[in-house]
Image 1 (cartoon, rainbow, N blue to C red):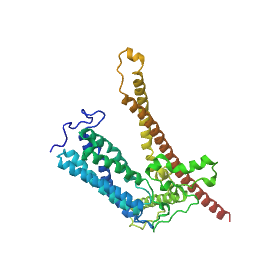
Image 2: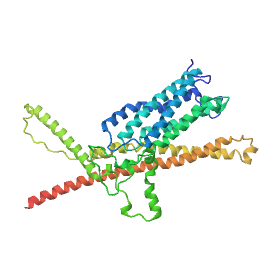
Image 3: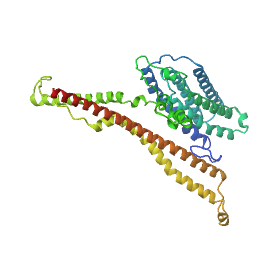
Image 4: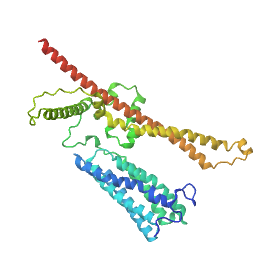
Length: 403
């Protein structure tokens, strides 16, 4: 059984216009979501089991409907695998189908633990089902064109049904639990806020597109917003928890420095461990170290949307240039110069590309600015708290000296 069909390992098909080769689709394109999910399943399960189950989570209609659709997707892939083996298709197609079966089983396991251990939608499952549905469009179109009977054949029909079912599962994955805000863990204290923000309960795509801000925008469209209409800060940006973690880091750094100074003194004096009488002078607080500990890793994530925004901004002029060239090929001057008119589908593709780059550019830039803004709030809260605590200590010591 050959690994690829007659088109071999090429990327673009020579038999079908605007299509990839079946070998490229089966051996690389369609296996990407499955491989990524399988690589992340074990670490995610370990994290979910460490967190433990939530209180008050029950089996609901949403859980059973999504499980049913995911099971249907699994059954469709098993049926596809049987058809491919029966018709002696290349090994690449069978391998892709096997990976789909295994990854959907992993998705079902994750779905169960995510439902009972996490209040929000799973980002991993959202990404998996989205890219599975989008990427499945290419092999579905290819199988329909290859089949002489079209959708009357079982293979393209199963492909189409799987794409539709995967899209439904992605839509169901975006639906949050009805009581997700009230779900808590037994050993975790819940932060009580007067106007809690919906941001902590938003899923990945709601964060990316800022859909969670829509209720506030709709209220501002109807009336002038007041302070009582504004939500509270995200719990992770509150100054007191940040101060506690930062103070713990400062204390840990001082303990390490004290131990190093003690070890150095013992080496110089030759005394036994623990017998040194040298006093340790606390080091000065290093603001850069505090800043890195507070927002360092989060701020580094801002490089991802910044890089994507730069790529989009550089690709948009190239698309506009191609669109101008396309429109110029239909002018009278181009006809007089015997310039060949470019195909219409290319014009539609360029217009769609310009539109997509505009939308993505705005989203990436907004994400970059949002991350920078949140980091600045966290850093300012920590520094203000440290300065205030220091001022209180100085004020208390001055009062004692005055007395």
